[in-house]
Image (cartoon, rainbow, N blue to C red; front, side, top):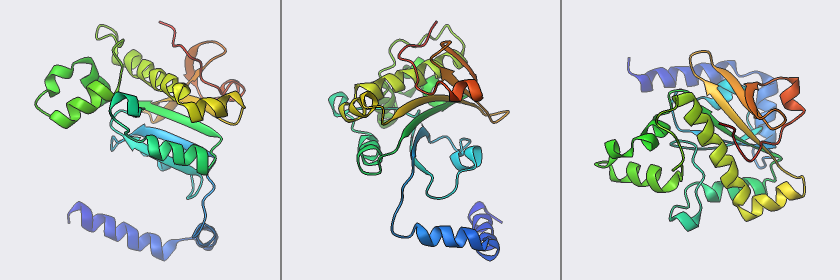
Length: 214
């Protein structure tokens, strides 16, 4: 049995066993959505936002690309900016989370882009779109992935329609890191300028800081 057949069997099982309360919720969502969270994360198949967060349909608006990269028209790549604007301006999300992850191939490639020169579109996306010229190949990958996430947070702050929302205290930014082997999350806390477990202390200080300490 191939993977498509397996997915179809899982789909049929879901249809048979979908709880009545979930059916009612989906019916309510048929013509409207009102998520409060925009999650920007990597396309990596190991990162599964709904499994990770236990989110239900309608709760999280998800934008994914290779390396959870934020780009702007000024860099020559609009990337996912239209989807981000839709979430911020039309859906009026209250939180934006950027979530990087361990063993990130995109960050590895940014650290050593010459290996991807023969793959033109990937090379252009990571070399031009990332803007992470200050990552350090001599440092551990963990450091570079977390630094990369903070760089993307800073890019969000430079986007006009997001900057206005932050100033008006209508949006909070969050920097997260997923450790794939344990499927545990860490978040950057601006109070102590460190990455740590998501807990009550973090929840009390939810706006990501501008800089990541060395």
